[in-house]
Length: 224
Image (cartoon, rainbow, N blue to C red; front, side, top):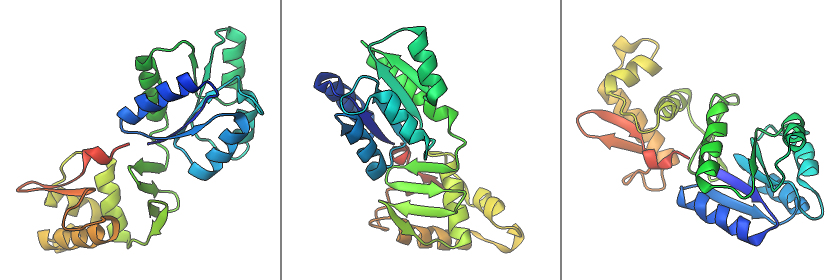
């Protein structure tokens, strides 16, 4: 998952960055409000950790501007612990609130909770692989990948439960409307086609893994 941290205190910024990177997230940083808006437009993060008190533009202003165009999850981070500030943040469009000094375990729990609440979003990210189910678009490292309907359905099935092994029969029943005319060879064919489009090295796949004797799964390490 790509996370943007907007924080003007270098100690807090480095602490959050190192912690979130250790959890496998891709982290982008911003040091003031205007920088946060610029980085938000460039990086298109999956989540924003937004400090309230920042130079140039404060967190409230940044949040308001972001909410004009995007519904990206935002967790406000601030040294203030008043009910008024929390109400203001949530009513402005924040998804959650963390008060300094924070426990990194709390940060992890709140990030996970927010992402679970939006897990039904049509937009999904798995490492550098992005799927927009509303537009039926797939991007790898920001570059659009053209998939056939069957290839898309296969990828969507595997990404529906990262790490779960899908047997040939489950794949056939899920993506073929008339499954009696499909076989394991058809599954292998579409796995091959899909790998050649989304893998850097189809012979050493990182996304679609073979579990010999059982079927295929999306590599758990790609889940962000």
